Amino acid sequence: MSGRTVRTGACTAADARTRRQQAQLYLEAALLVQSEDLAEAATVATGNAVLAAIAAADAICCAAAGVRSRGQDHRQAIGLLQEVTGDAALARALRDVLDLKDAGHYGLSNVSRTNCTTALRRAQTLVEAAAARVR
Image (tube, rainbow, N blue to C red; front, side):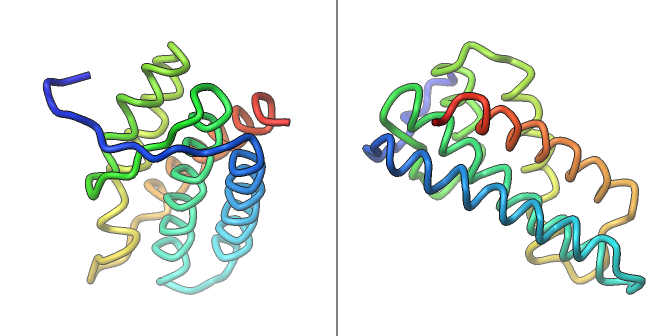
């Protein structure tokens, strides 16, 4: 990770299971909203995909190392995920979703359907990884 210190918080196997389930539900909500025929649907779905990805990363890190990222900068979770799993593809998936966080949560213009689809695919990758790693 870069020279910055990542603020972490301790978590348990039970916490990992809770965050895994939350990740799944956020993803399900994102997929449901994405199907709506509204201009805002892609933005709201993207926002939920971001929440799914963060929860999945937390679940994976809790299960693998007993810690999760707790800093104000969600991007620090990327390095922690890479560090505890050694999986660069998972870290890239989280980075790709977090790149859309501001647009999905705070944007005044709507997220494109293309970017929404990307966010959903990356979040799905993380949720599936959490399901495989967290029991």
